[in-house]
Length: 68
Image (cartoon, rainbow, N blue to C red):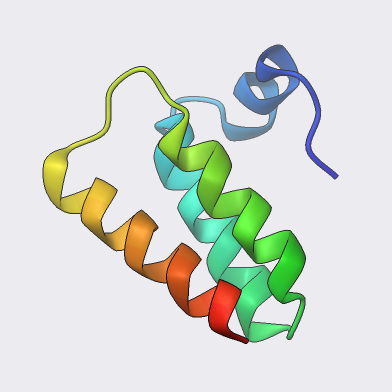
């Protein structure tokens, strides 16, 4: 599902990589694919720079997916 960092940039265009990963994680979470959602949120956390509030959301969402 997740390719290299370069392919992620191609997929998201001008969108911030952490935002694309958050949205992908949210979609997977809603679909009940919790393990994949965890991976999506983790990819968002691996970005070079993430706004502090967004980092908190990614950690929280990842924790929720891990609890499922």
